[in-house]
Image 1 (tube, rainbow, N blue to C red):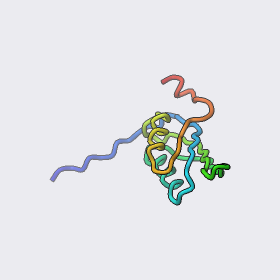
Image 2 (cartoon, rainbow, N blue to C red):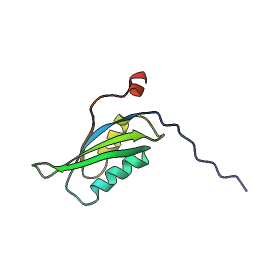
Image 3 (cartoon, helix red, strand yellow):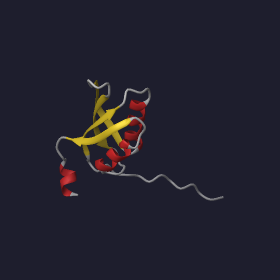
Length: 101
């Protein structure tokens, strides 16, 4: 019998930032967006969702790396592929870890 492969252990890179995600008003879109953030190796903090005049929602979420891929641009592209996500972008300043990379 073969031995099961152990999960890789990732070290947090220190990447953190704030994302702005525009969502259509559809049940489940918010949960899919937050679930994608978690599955891609980030914790979310300070989640704030407001309704826009056009009926869509602005989701502002502060994310912190927990050991997954440390590229927030890639995370935004992955979020934009979700059903009923209009756009996703990084807002605010870059961290020192990203300046070095």
